[in-house]
Length: 257
Image (cartoon, rainbow, N blue to C red; front, side, top):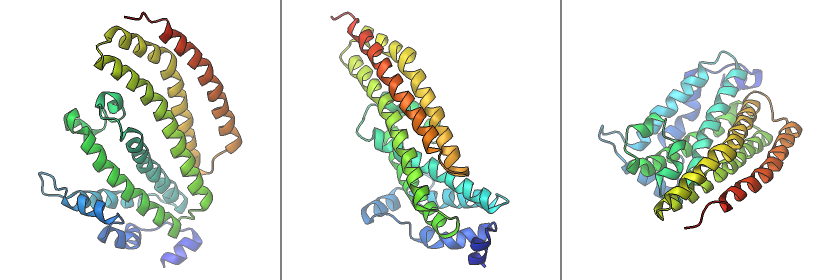
């Protein structure tokens, strides 16, 4: 019956999806060392990280099944993949940065993090990364089985990830410079650089996030308009070069102590 639904592009039930993903829920697809670490991470409630993921992933399957059409289910699945992939991008971009002040703004409004003090955020992000790895892999496998997940669609997801990491790199590099100034007690310079970032760089980053959202929408519901997206990215590159000159000039004008 599931094969017929796939061929006829009929929506699947929650039971269908849970059955198709059952082997992964029973034995999550993680490298041995990571699997053992995740199994041994047990919270105060007595729930392991793996069981936490199983519950979260089951909810995701229900969200997909709740869509009334096959196309709607496919779009919802792809949006979930993008969300989980985004957490992998955040982890990869911040893994070598210890100071939460540099990257904390990326998670400061996420309930999972607000329940803990900042000193625990690094460990929480690692756990969220493991969950994201599992969910993204299992959702992509499901998409390949049922929802016409093509090589082109995978390339689109990779493009989204690459562009998101590019945005994060720009944001975090400048935040690291500010953090280093604070550590060196160059408070005035740090404040001035932060002001320049707010006025010069952050508006560009905000516009890049708008393009990223457009790319995500196209991935989920149609396909990326490569020509249009490339044109916008090229325009951003020109703008970045222009802003870089303004940014560097502002930094160089700062008084040296």
